[in-house]
Length: 385
Image 1 (cartoon, rainbow, N blue to C red):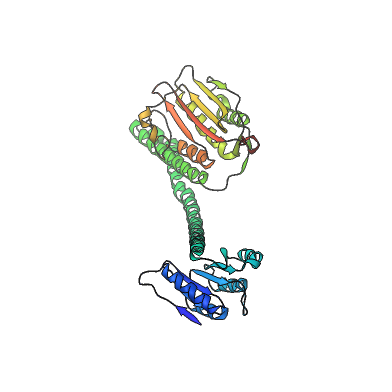
Image 2: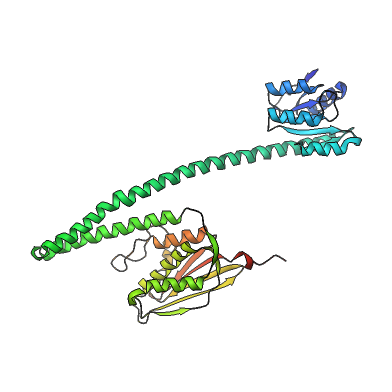
């Protein structure tokens, strides 16, 4: 037996009502239609399932105890036909435990008979809202999966591009540099000073472009890939980096002030690159200072490991600070200090990938201070309360 109704305006939702007591089913359909819903009622489970196979419904409202098929079995069968359909079970006082089992089987809620429409309306609203949120989550998951697949394709394309850039573009640059050196070595004596200067500029430009490509590849490499988190001794890492930067006596006259640094939690290789870039910049921009001073310090503040690298070098004007961490952004000319303008971009990318922040402050001719934060090891995270 079927009871179908159509509202004059768009219904709030399409409801499938199933109750073997035909009179109760018809009365419920009439009441729900007055409330703005579009109910379709059936007195048997098989008829309801046939209708569900032919069209979609937002919500199934079913009696629990029925001779042909109980409400739990009907709900499971309905969800096989339409996984998005929500369910409400109507039950008597003596079967509340069974109603709870129905919820475990996928029902959103249950209501005890006899009931008034004022009791049923909020139950229906909650069930429809749960359905809406469930469908929204499924759509978000679908989009995330789709974006993940697109990102995988983009990463593969980037890897391919990086390989092409690394080999196909850098090889001729190195040839240009090599030919310039070979020509100068073989025929330099017969080349006038102006010619030698041009050859040197060509070789220098090719070498600089090669460094720029290498830095771009590094920027791409440090921007992707999983982080290998572990406890990192920043004291040991700073000493290791300084040893490498001061190899062969380089920067031997620089005064170093190294404070005791807290450990942090992160990827050792990437954090080493942060220190390499910051400290090499500090050495570069203090090269003309007498004396040259570099200070490295840190502390645990507000549950984060906070570090700084400070120098008394060239500094910069703070009105240009917003450009400092951008790719290809340089605050000094190439003639003053060599560089590609990517090093600090790499630093920011690595720090932010660790969930940290980085900032800088400086004055022209009075040095610069770079501050950054990183997570502390998990066993050192302050506990609430």
